[in-house]
Amino acid sequence: MSTKNKMSTAQESFLRKHKREILLVNIYRLIVFIAFFGLWEVSSRLKLIDSFIFSSPSRIIKTFYNMLMDGSIFYHTGITIFETLVSFSLGSILGIIIAIILWWNKTIAKVLEPYLVVLNSLPKTALAPILIVWLGNNMKSIIFTALTVSIVVTILNVYNGFINVEEDMIKLIYTFNGKKQDVLKKVILPSNIPTIISTMKINIGLSLIGVIIGEFLAAKAGLGYLIVYGSQVFRLDWVMMSIILLALLATALYQGIVFIEKRIKRY
Picture (cartoon, rainbow, N blue to C red):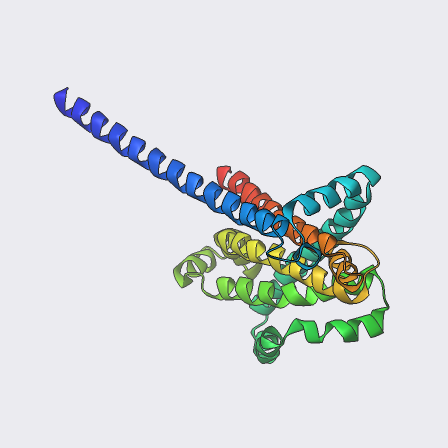
């Protein structure tokens, strides 16, 4: 009984220490956040920096409020979210399908592998102007630009996961007269769910980057358009506000994938 109480006390002490560390980290993060924006605001008000060029937190909040009232912030943010989710879905689904085809047919994999490596190392921003010429100055070219940024990474990551599955598990399926489709359904896909989820975490960020690149070049709406247009007409409040919204949006999309991951792990 005394040993149990001693362990329980030790555990409670560990938990208290762990909670205290988490609390301290959160406090330090809050201090950094307040210090950064506070210094920015004070520097702007004291005219240590030019608020016309660098903007200020109060001007960004005022701009956000005005755009919130006229509804334009929902329009621009909604366009960017829609384009990101469409390109993310296409990149993930097509990437997994192509990875399955490569795993299924070794000849196709050997033929395409060097091209995929070259495409992966190619700066995708170089393709964006070409896509705009081919597809036009519209949302389609933005989505395809984002797709080119994310799909090659998806294919390579998922395919590498497929070919690194333990051979013993595959042999076991064949021992019981299983077919190749049985290996895919019962071994390859289930054992690569963590790899697919991990790739989706990378993919959602890449899709957002691709959409912003596309909006820089071809959009008439969206947060990327606001950044470019704001810099052209010297509305730096729009630019800074859009960048902050992009950071919040990227965090929300990533947390959405983490939420899906937790739901999958329960099953």
